[in-house]
Each structure stands twice: as structure tokens, then as C-alpha cells.
Image 1 (tube, helix red, strand yellow):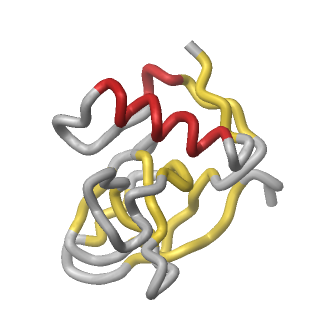
Image 2 (cartoon, helix red, strand yellow; image 1 turned 90 degrees about the vertical axis):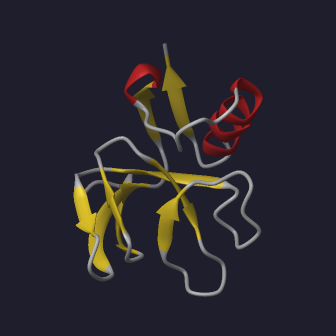
Image 3 (cartoon, helix red, strand yellow; image 1 turned 120 degrees about the horizontal axis):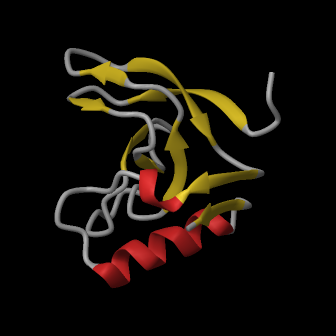
Length: 103
């Protein structure tokens, strides 16, 4: 197992692709699409989805890049419509977990 990866739960109601930036819901400890406008913990970018995961019909186990990694900035997937400043803030938040986005 890689020191950069963790097995976690993706919360139901979403079908996400590899490279999606995730936030961690404080109350449940489950992960969801990062949303800077949220107030449940997922407003802080915490990890990156490692594999496509379809949790449309229920919570699904998934693998995330949670620390100590370099990723391609251009391959990161953010919530649709995220502003440039909020995207930059998410990249900074990932860096606190030692996830570096390279151009």
C-alpha cells in the first residue's frame, strides 16, 4: 500500500471521476465533492479521488490521495463553476496535506 493513499467512504448521490477534489464531512467522516460554499467540513479541500467511483445509489468505498503526493494541476476536477480564487484556495488547502499540484 502507498503511504499517499487511504481507503474511505464516498457519500451517496454522486458519480465522480479520478482526479476530483474532495472534502471531508466533519460529522460523518465521509468524503464528498469539495464545495467551498459548504459549511459541513467539505468546504476544505482534503484529498483527491484516486479512481472513478459511482456512489449514485449509496455510499461507496473508494481510494483517495490524502497526503505526500504530486499531482498534475491540469487533471484536477473541481465543482463546476468554481472561481479562480476558490480554486487557488483549494490547491493551498491540499498543500497543507503535502499534496502538491504541479503545472
